[in-house]
Image 1 (cartoon, protein in one colour):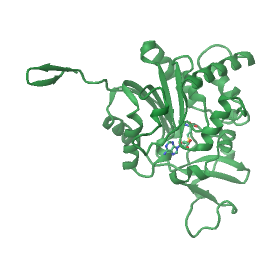
Image 2 (cartoon, protein in one colour):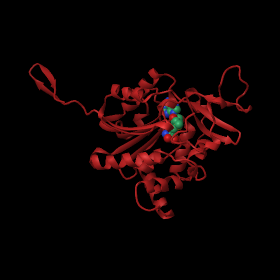
Image 3 (cartoon, protein in one colour):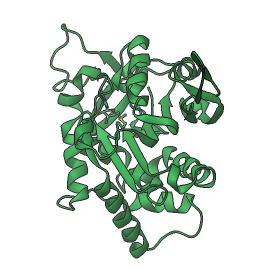
Image 4 (cartoon, helix red, strand yellow):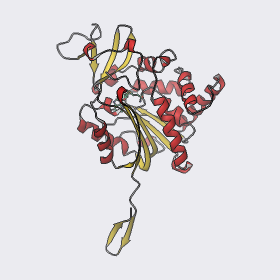
Amino acid sequence: MATLSSFPSTETEYSEDDVMEVSEASEDPESSSEVAVYGPGDYKEKFNPTDYLNFYYSNAAMPQGARVSLFVLPIFAHIMEETMAPEERFSMIDVGSGPTIYSAVCFRTLVRRIYLTDYVESNLTVLEEWLNKSKPFDWSTVISVVKRNEGGRPPNVWEVAKIEALCRQKVAKGGIFHADVHQPKVCPFEQMANREYDIMVSIFCLEAACSTFDEYRQAMKNMTNMLRPGGRLILGSVTEDSCYVAGMPSKERAVVFSLLHLTEQEIVDTLEECDFDLSTMRKYALNHEGVLYLMVSKRPRAKLAYTPGRFIRLS
Ligand SMILES: C[S@@+](CC[C@H](N)C(=O)[O-])C[C@H]1O[C@@H](n2cnc3c(N)ncnc32)[C@H](O)[C@@H]1O
């Protein structure tokens, strides 16, 4: 079973043998000690933002496992800072951010507007509650880890608060929006200041949202249509696994969601089909953990020249 980005401790890990598929024949999985595996169609009903955050990003959970995304995103962000001019990196969108804000933490100084998006309304509510401070999750440990990975000494409480305030500022300029990667129009563009984005982050979303490889290819196309030509994608994927733990509401019960089984080759082939220039690709993989992070540029718009009677492609 996947432990998304080295998901927590071996103590709480379940083996494949502990997992049963939900079938019509099964009793109510929530009342039994068996572990139910929910699918892409169950997110709205069964994904619980609080359980997810407590399991992976709470101050208690953080020391129990390395969150690889918090190491990799700052590295990729740093590369972008060095290789993209400020006017080329105005906006960043996280597709399938869930209830998390760590992508905003990693990109807070790089872009002017940050958009956090997800399919599940309760995730969006948790993000709104963080943004308006009405019921904010405590992101201080995550912020400290990101800051330390950016270099320098551990930040004190005032520095952490300053970082979080900057994240809020950038998310307030962008927004929090619904997204469905299965729709050609993934986000409600009419409500958003941007239609195309300079940087797109999507971590562990598509393989959770899709049941078949065809669905995955279409979802990737829908999602990356929102990235401008020449823009950069950071894609975090779980490879060759079939499910992950989305929270442990009690010591006895894990909530498990299915993942589409994907190989690295399938992911890379899909990116090529979606007009990404594989010669720009940078990769960070933890093969034994089954997590793969890719940063890759979308091909720029072709330059056309008109010669009498026809257009010719210059690039
Ligand atoms: C494993 S979580 C990843 C959350 C976050 N990116 C992280 O790294 O912790 C998968 C996310 O995909 C979202 N998701 C599921 N189906 C989706 C869909 N059709 N469109 C967009 N997001 C979807 C879920 O709501 C959930 O927040």
